[in-house]
Length: 153
Image (cartoon, rainbow, N blue to C red; front, side, top):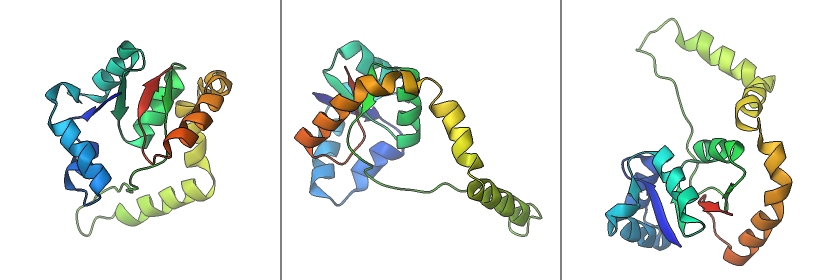
């Protein structure tokens, strides 16, 4: 299987700067083959679909989950490589900082963020889930890997 990623984003940067030998090897494979660095996640996902199982694409888990929710022929393999949070920046002294923090905390505590994610990410996922569960479990056992990649089934 050929490995690829978006060539200009945080996933590629993660491999480039990782001190972990396995991730350094992945970076060298990505860097050494310009054809595997997609100009966008959408083009990387399309390459997975077109490759009929010969190409796997690394991308951030929210994007990967969203793509899988839209296409039953895609699955994610393994767990998370890295976990990073996201933030909203305001100018120092902004009157919006505290109300936005409180609103986000309230949305999280009331599970509304999860409900929003389910609305958009899992819209069609229920249709695909049973088809892919067996393959996901077998693949995880065989590879014992810890990263998200796309594989076309």
